Image (tube, rainbow, N blue to C red; front, side):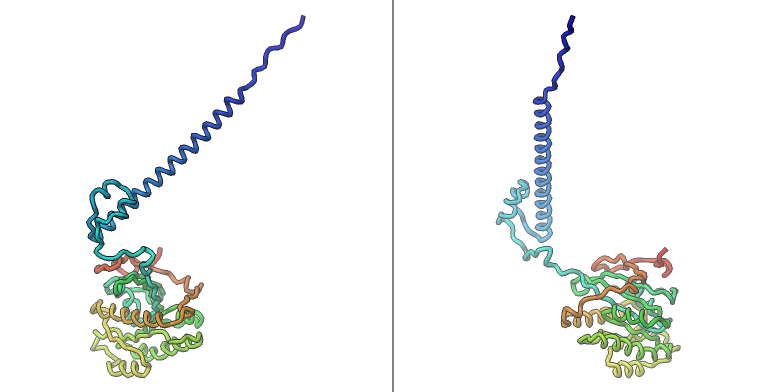
Length: 313
């Protein structure tokens, strides 16, 4: 007696293939709808940005174009008048970076000068051996300026590091105290050092330098007269600013603004090859402090109770 074999169930490959095919088609359709939704959201966002821009410029846009949400009808409409011409975003000038080094002997007020300019406050207690690069953003003449101010320690240091600092800077503030005769005698050596290092680089023009006589409020302790400072200024052919960092912010800001003006004038007339800034590993090791100033702000850049609050942890 022979047994009949049971029938083997054969899978329906046609049905499985159709299922996979329809799943792939559905996935492609969903991706297409998703891309269309993204494009629609982007178009609506552009319309909103355009409406905000036109409203900020004092334009009167027709209500029909605004409600329709159509980019074409908004851009092609002639029912609005611009109060001034529009410029592309790429045509706005970028912020100019200016590097300034403050030179001078110790205890002449270099740190107080930098902190006074940035914070509008006078700080009397600080670490005289700490070197810091302050980064401060400010609006001068309608354009953004990024100040990088190197506050040197004012002590005897390695000649290579001193040369790197001078090469790094676009301009210099050489500070002395009217109550310290030694700091006044140091000015000529520092100015000669700046000119000597830049003359070896075959620069067309020497960098801008301003001599700053600080602590003029201490009249009873004065050891350097005004006439002696002016004589040194005429001899070196460099401008002189006699100020008191303790008394006011305006004189301090005037020194930095004057130096910035000289730097910009030299940058504009210098060849592009001399505007390139090199990268120094020695300068990268100096700690940097960023101020939180907003452009055009009339208040303080950042506030702190003492200078030690600025030190990194």
